[in-house]
Image 1: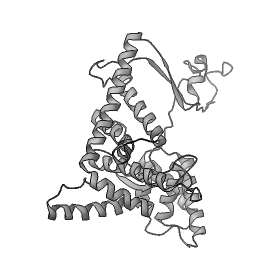
Image 2: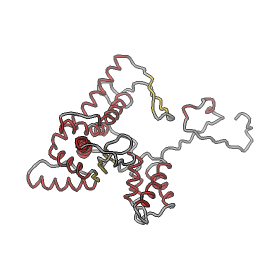
Image 3: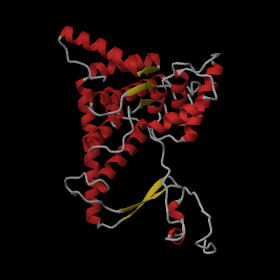
Length: 329
């Protein structure tokens, strides 16, 4: 870098995914001093990328590319190319001449949740537990404002360990989340465990990932977002994102007493979310049982089908004077 004279018409460019690992001397003025962030594409960008890859396959003329782009938040070009390729393969296996939205939706599910494992047999009792667990997630999500719409609920095992999943797809890209939305997210994550408690008076190991994600959200609210009334609008600990490991490390800059307060606040937020989820499901106990039974029989419920069932139940409840079902909007 020091060998270039100022009159040389040479531009040196470089790219790295590991900016935090580069020597600071390399980035000082006069060297690589102009930085251009190439971030993940937004919805408009994903739509444009999808249209490029769609030229390589024969898709139906009325394919809703905007809807497909909305289903893929956070995905990069390689992910989108993989989705288009996977959808084309699915269409060939199904003997179709053109690739339609069902193939793209299945491809998105494969990327997010993994391949279906229909040959993985689970016993009747576990099947019932999974049905209640996933329906618990869905009903809590439908009952709370500002949550992402439920697109699909399945109790067909996927990937390595998932025995079922509830797929929520945001309607738009989000860059900010309010405190109430984060609390609703925690409650939704704990809806599965709450449903198990109500239905069986016991809990299973199926909520392990839910508990981990809910705890991470709650700890982030307390330590990074200043959303704790007890600890105030402060951040606790210095956080460094390690992109090459896909995780962050924390350097503690607070006392043991503060650490105990943080743990107490995190626990309070998670327990509060669990209690909200339980109260919602207790209020819709009969609906939970009915929908869990339908899911157990059908194995899969699409979001539109769930909305239709809830609409029918809402009309029936209104006619009989019973409590209304959650809003499926």
